[in-house]
Structures are given as structure tokens and as C-alpha cells.
Length: 155
Image (tube, one colour):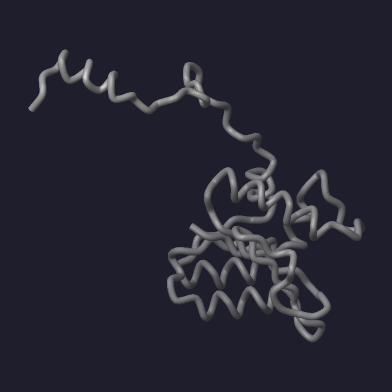
């Protein structure tokens, strides 16, 4: 299920990224890219005041980055997307703004406060299950297939 995220709200809740850092947006996109790779979910992150407004070249395959034009802000862009969403039940909105979260809930969207989503981002990747050899060759040779067919019978 894709996420629609207020980027600066989320940065404010992360212990390892500072809003005063000139690279804070890029650091968040990097962190979101790891989340996307781990969870196979897509994200759209909206930041306040970028030049020019609109989709950014910082976007990746799984993380779409949008900067609000100067006459707008992230909350307004997110609210507009909430109103226009064709499948509201298929979107999770992440924000610290109560008005944004309330609007999303009214449309039937799932919501997470920025602090809740920050906790998800901070989780380490799940460990590889014991006994699973990631490098194991799971392909059978023709001889192995013949041997198994002899044991279990050929139908």
C-alpha cells in the first residue's frame, strides 16, 4: 500500500536527520529508499518550498519526491492529493498535521502520525532465517531429476 508523506514533519521526528541540515531532504529520500527496498511499498514524499515546485530529480523508482511551489506548502499539496485520490482505501497518509490526518480519515485512508512512521523507518532489516542459505543452488540437474523420478515413480 503506497504512502503519502509530509517530508519535513517526518524529518522533525527522526533522531538522525536535522531540519537545519541543508541535505535533510536527500537524507530522508535515502532512508525512504531503504524502507521501500525492505517493504516493497512505494512512497510519495512532499516537502515545503522547493525551486521549482513539482516532482524533483531526487525521485527514485520507489520514492516520488515533490516540492511545493512557494505560494503553497506540503500540507496543501497533500490535502489536494487526498481529495483527488481515486482509491482512497489504498493509501496511507503520514503527517503530524491533525487537519491533514482528519481529512484522510474522512476519505477512508489509513493514517500514521509522523512519529509512528519514524519508528518504522528506524527498525533494522529482518534477519535472514536460520538454516536458509541464500547462496544455495536450488536448481536440479537432469541427473538429479532422473534420480528423483526413479525413487517416486514417473507419471
